[in-house]
Image 1: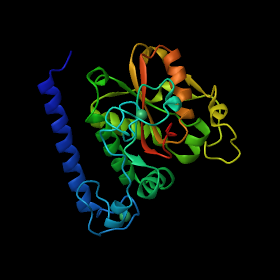
Image 2: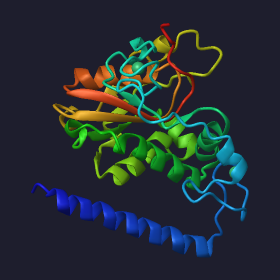
Image 3: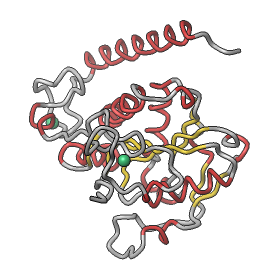
Image 4: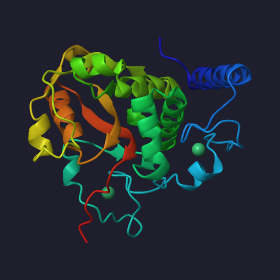
Length: 261
Ligand SMILES: [Zn+2]
Ligand SMILES: [Zn+2]
């Protein structure tokens, strides 16, 4: 049954209240720590609950930028960045740069399993699209860029899948995190032995359940965007499986797209 706007709004408010109540209870049991550096008991900022030095070194990508790439505009309505890395991607957003605290948050979540960092990143990701999500994307499906099963087993969790689930909950969107599969192990894109990031991931992804993406708008979730090659490879197979459009949402952007000016 279709839900009315008022009911949807009430559900979002209810979920937010439950989340805040859970956080307050958890604070009583486990005193909060800063998810950027792990320091405990210091004065944490009310928004992201970061300590002051981490807050200072958190570099955000300001809202109101280019509708396609999200980068700040050179002049009203004019983007100076090269959109070719976004081939097959309707729009891309990330709340933070992968520097300073942004990078620290991703590493603490991914490598140390800090779920406070996960929660902060998911909140920022939901906010960066939630405020500007076009009406046609309000029923989009959330899909995660998958790890290969061997890496997932070694890490114990799939960071993009957890981010996807947390973002979907915050945006009240349907998460079909496991519909993509990494069919062959690839080197990490940052590995110095990777000479071509595009070739490294070419043909590495398969859509396992085309019926859940066919005709749908898909918001693809990953932890970090670097060259965009992984996202393009995923978008290609999703579009080939019948997805209507694919957008990309990551927690951090490792480098800006090349400026064409
Ligand atoms: Zn800190
Ligand atoms: Zn742009």
